[in-house]
Amino acid sequence: MLYIRFSGFVSISNIERLILQLCN
Image (cartoon, rainbow, N blue to C red):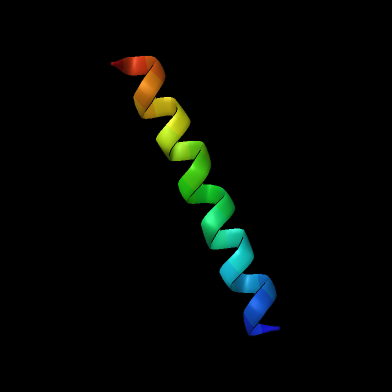
């Protein structure tokens, strides 16, 4: 269960990173 939560956090981080790249 902790692994799933960690994976979801990583996915959100990747999405935020892509958004930052688009803004830049």
